[in-house]
Image (tube, rainbow, N blue to C red):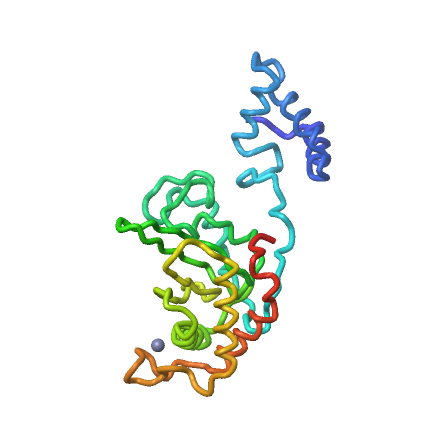
Length: 258
Ligand SMILES: [Zn+2]
């Protein structure tokens, strides 16, 4: 077994202070006498998770710094489950059995939004999440209508429910092309599915008009036990506050990435 030498300690101090050339020097020292080339030594070391004192996955980046946030009044802060990130990074396989070696984002997944790096977006925004060209020649476009910054904030569930009801009812006063408007389970936004090719500017106008309708509502549409599966689980004021916050950032909706 190797022991940490004085020179390792010095190099470690330099590596810790961000001196990248110390990495190369440490590789050379560690593999002294080997017939491997310097490039091969460096490659092997990097692939085995980095140098002395560097534990974990060998992610050299700093994650891009602070997440940019726009809306937050209607979106209370989200708690991150302890260890959730570590579980994601170290899992041996994906949730559906697909092999996964290096954590999230390394393999293309079936669901479009699972391939979106949620740490790189700036909510609120509206983006195209999927386009389906149907056999008969029709096109469906699915939009990600994001109200809250992922993993930083979310809508309360009764507000989500009331936005869903209100938007679904009001949007159809403006368009005959709406297929569906449904909430995301993470409570940070909704999916809007429309007939037609992608048209983000027109969709932003449609969402704006619908959110303005919500601000004028006197009651949540169909919030009763006859027309809804949980008629008591609504918040008109929560829906209005979500709409207000979204509208306050109208000029930024088409900028998705931070
Ligand atoms: Zn309902």
